[in-house]
Amino acid sequence: MGSSPQSFEFPAWPQYGEEERNALNRALDQGQWWRIGGSEVDTFEEEFAEYHGAPYALAVTNGTHALELALQVLGVGPGSEVIVPAFTFISSSQAAQRLGAVAVPVDVDPETYCIDPAAVAAAMGPRTKAVMPVHMAGQIADMDALEKLAADAGVAILQDAAHAHGARWQGKKVGELGSVAAFSFQNGKLMTAGEGGAVTFPTRELYDSAFLRHSCGRPPTDRKYFHNTSGSNFRMNEFSASVLRAQLGRLGGQIDTREERWPLLASLLAEIPGVVPQARDERNDRNPHYMAMFRVPDLGEERRNALVDTLIERGLPAFVGFRAIYRSDGFWESAAPEESVEDIARRCPNSEALTRDSVWLHHRTLLGTEQQMHDIAAVIAESMAGA
Ligand SMILES: *Cc1c(COP(=O)(O)O)cnc(C)c1O
Image (cartoon, rainbow, N blue to C red; front, side):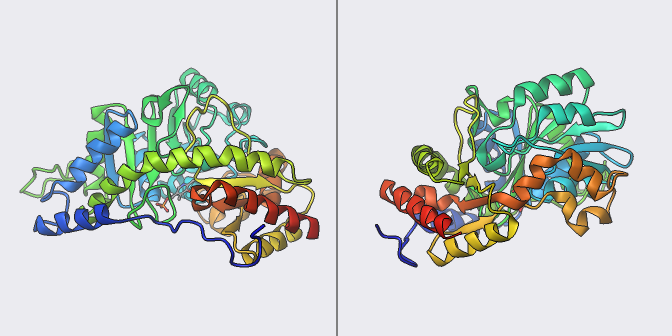
């Protein structure tokens, strides 16, 4: 059955080969290693935008900066509120808070782990400037409901697409959903240059505004130190862009494999008593599967943690899920809602539960063989029986 310790040999991550090597040499030989002098970042932006059905993409230093820059060009600043899911990586709220805005956490759906539109509606107020759905583990949030809410209220949607490279919703790519989207290329993400990020835009105006702000407010042709807007330096370098062009070439095939493996693994997990795999909203017709997620609702936090330790001992790249963002001290160091942790926890019961009972496996497991899906499920079943 192949479930003895260290018996798993999943594909390594990141994946790379001649394409990345050639790309790096190409960038090196340009003799200009920043975007203003070279062509790799410009070309990557075109290729990434096209792949996601967006008119424009801007490459940046990382996903956290991508979110921050996107919020800034959407007009978020001191006095604004940004509605974010309580169950997410902390960058979602940190990006808003770095701009002096209040991040308002709301609850997520207990099956898809994505932001709950009803909770968003309840949190909307006169200061709401943007809503930030996170496409959790590649599952697109309910964009139909969110777009309607946002349009009615006149607020922007910023998709945190750090898990959603190549995802589709009812035939539409992320960049075709009509709003701004932010991506990450950090080492573990679905395509990577170690670090990096990008923002896709539906209009030239937004791209131009973001370009200025990501380059110290300076137009690309400026030679006289005129800085037209406030800003910072979030520019991607040429090496990263060259590697990301090669990584983009691998993405589609990797998604195809994960899209075959996850339904099998999910069906096997669903048969294990006490295990509930992340559900899929069928409108999400291409899911790139950033994480293989499931819940163990009956164990409680300590035994969930012990289960993850056991899975790691048995050779699985397993992790506990995110902690609800308002349960980290850092959340309270910047602008935060005028509510106590307990108040927020009371209106976010699903995020509370996910903090205690969610588990995820690295997406490289889903690049493994069909047999390995059976072996993974067998290890989880045995470990659950022992938990
Ligand atoms: C990884 C991640 C980010 C931040 O990306 P970095 O490139 O690491 O800064 C933002 N949001 C979510 C949901 C993420 O998982």
